[in-house]
Length: 187
Image (tube, rainbow, N blue to C red; front, side):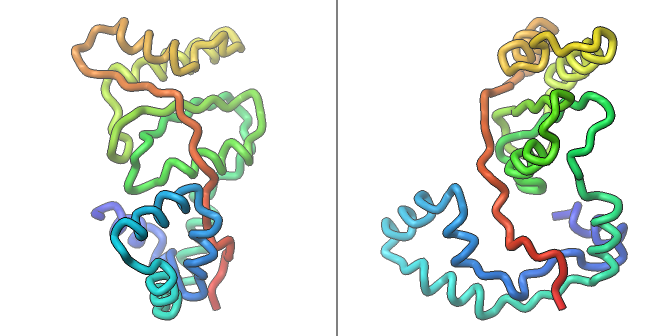
């Protein structure tokens, strides 16, 4: 992915690792576990062998300075001082939609609203989706209330009303939990 290069350039090194990751443990906690195991069964393959192989060869180590830089500059905390409306495609190869689940768990405030678009790609939003979201956030800023403007139904309705000729695709969606190895540092 081209974005990966720029992330590493900005952070001053590789901020990712897999050394020490237990892939079987990750799958056990994954909301996609049943689907993955079903696909393995249909293919006649052994997931345990693949998971053991992945874990055995996990050797990539992060640059501590890069992790520290991104932790300081790019880690969401959920502490909101102003209203926020997020938009996320449900099939995002760069930032998994499950990040939104984690963010909502952190924020736990009436300031946050989240919206989802049934599309593939990172930030692959149509102009009408973007304008509808901006109008919703503007309404919140002006009135001090969301008044339902950030609901799936109302965002879709607002996007369609713009009649821009694109195909808005706001959708009701609840992402699963973010599954991670939960270690911040790798020695």
